[in-house]
Amino acid sequence: MEKYRIDPSKGMEFGIYTLGDHLADPRTGERISAKERIQQMVRLAELADQAGIDFFSVGESHQPYFASQAHAVILAAIAQATEKIKIGSSSTILSTSDPVRVYENFATLDLISNGRAEIIAGRASRVGLFELLGYDLQNYEALFEEKFDLLLQLNEDEVVNWSGEFRRPLRNAEVLPRPVNGSLPIWRAVGGTPASAIKAGYAGVPMTLAMLGGPASVFKQTIDTYREALAARGFDPTQLPVATTGFFYAAETTQEALRDYYPHINEGMKKTNGQGFPKQLFAQGADHRSIINVGSSQQIIEKILYQHEQFGHQRYLAQLDFGGVPFEKMARNIEYIGTEILPAIKKYTKQGGAEQ
Amino acid sequence: MKVVGISGSIVGSKTKTAMSLLWEEMSKAYPNAEHVLLDLADYQLQFSDGRNYLDYTGDTAYVTEQIMQADILFIGTPIFQASIPGTLKNVFDLLPTQALRDKVAAIIVTAGSARHFLVAEQQLKPILSYMKAHLVSSYVFAEEKDFLNGKIINDDVHFRLQRLIEDAFDLAEAQASIRTKKEAEYDF
Figure (cartoon, chains in turn purple, orange):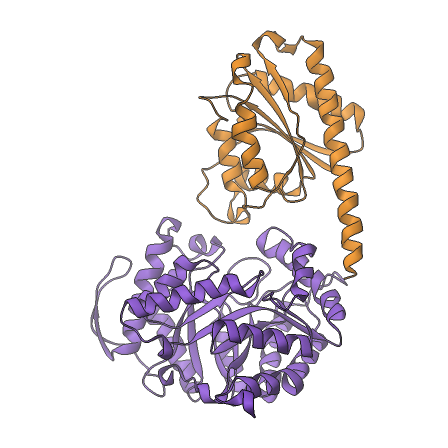
């Protein structure tokens, strides 16, 4: 776990991620400017840092209703504004970027932040960026696999010799600067299906798993499959961390949390995904077996601990800003996390923690 | 209430004729409904490549967006090679897996002979169910002998179309009111 800067003796890590969506608040119909939205992400990271949260990440998206096209630049601002919190991408769309450039950016970010930078690399769920950035969608899978291999090699070796299909070969190439401790934690972003998790397992890289809705038991299968794939290729599953991600919203009561967050999720999904989020499915989020972590602090603590029992994961990432949530509500969420949720999670997930 | 009709083939005239008649009857019976009739012959649709429908452009974006906005879908189809035409199947392939959630779908089949009657039952209904549509269980089937010179000459087909329209609107209203009531109970 050390290679990935994770210390399990301190308990499960708790992080916050934003996709960088730029949507109207459905209650007022008003959308802040892209400038304000980006500054909001930086302020949110600052608050997360002050609350003792472990990790903060920003996604890359190139479509309408997003402001995080240049996510590495936003992360640089966050690096400067924060002190302790680890920072990363969630995710970097590697398929449409040159891995050398990505590595240069994130190694630089690591230097700016004193060794706090990480990459979570993904394939994109929406594909408009292929045309925008000049790539052929027909190569959707091949592009990612080749670029991801190269990225891992750049991380391992200071001098790289490489050739592939989608960019010119590298001959004794030195990719600089180097990160503070020689390498960066590089994770593979995985959607809900086991097929993608198997690829992460075969590559022997840590996995960040997206969970939109449904019971924990379904995602446990994906995580088990990942660990089996790791073991099948001779990797030690106890040395490779798993992170899960999903909707999060805390309020005084569970009903209030559902009421507060639902319009943001529903309207936000319509705009970014083309279909709303069914109320029925969201209502099931109140059940302790559902992976939607929306509720009172106490209920969320119980759910996250239940998920930890099921998954044995090392990091949980909460998405609490989706769909134009007003900033004061985000700040209130950070407060719930910092004062109630985080201490309880740490207490019960650190080694030997349950007895303390 | 938004109503979208799809005339599912780019060749032939019977499906188009049946859909035109259905549209005429519907506009009389439900003049306030917003309605769009999509004749696939009028659009250049690309083959589905699995992307989110919002990422398509041009005609493909227009047609998929119209369908996604519909409350009621009337799907008109001929029968080709013991199934629906590839043009219509492609439209379904362009959409998300649960694209027809909370929508009512009603079917109008045209065919050369009565031998094709069960094709919609076995080929089209499973697709619509898979995509989570509320199905009007009976469909209208019109065959060669019901048509003459671009008109439907069998009065019974007229009556059946009228009933299909009514059934589709009734089902849509019933489903919407159940959903509204249910969602109010959630209290969020």
